[in-house]
Length: 115
Image: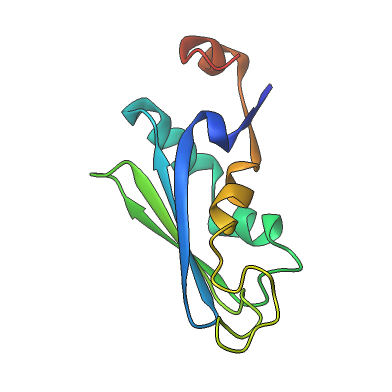
């Protein structure tokens, strides 16, 4: 197995609506999208943001865009107007998600130039 950080497969954007963070994860190439769908689940994202996200994580698939959208409930300490967090709007959560590592088999990694 080969460990691949998400920043090699995708770019991301994030923002907020109150106490809810929203992260868009967009594949660099169409062939990377199935890897994201398989490995970047709502459960994995919830675990990745353990201690930050206090609510549920929802995942929405946007195959025509090669993207996933994650909604992290109760993740911003109350939201921008009341949170004491440095990043009350969740702008850095996209970068944090890109640090997540997935494991793919060596043959797939080699075929996609990810080894």
